[in-house]
Length: 217
Image (cartoon, rainbow, N blue to C red; front, side):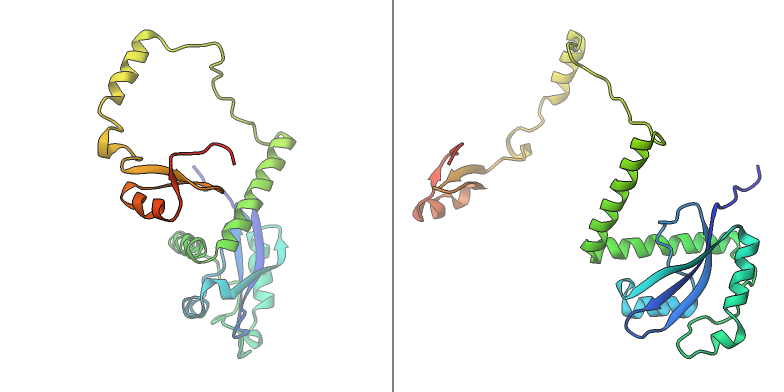
């Protein structure tokens, strides 16, 4: 089976927001939001030193296919271009693109980049989640994506045999120390309810808390 061809091709520029140094490259993908930021040697040294969050990627232009993409990179990233002290490109553009092994390495780096962002940049995680949610809503509303219809149990019941199996499967679970609420208790004051460790109960009672849970304030 022939390898499936990428559908999106573009020239991008990634800039170090601290040093002003930049890298220009080409990328082909199926997903424009794949968080690919570049694969240059000096670029990744820059990311390692200054952090992923201090690099900004922008798409300069889109191309119709891979051949046009290579040609445009060759026209942009020239010998004079890479002589710029701020340029992190090592070679002129349009050198033939990535091998399968290089593409796998690029995907691996992209996954590492996303993990770094997830672990260090809550704002990025929030924006990405909101963006993905918006895309999904648009696809549902336009009919491009079908909503999954889950089984409706209204008016239906489990068979007696099934109920007995469920009962037996739960025996021994959630008892004593296996219960997630083991050793906890509720307390309340005039403003709120709170669940605490029973070992701390006396400490709270001394400062005016009451054991139990008040449903309304």
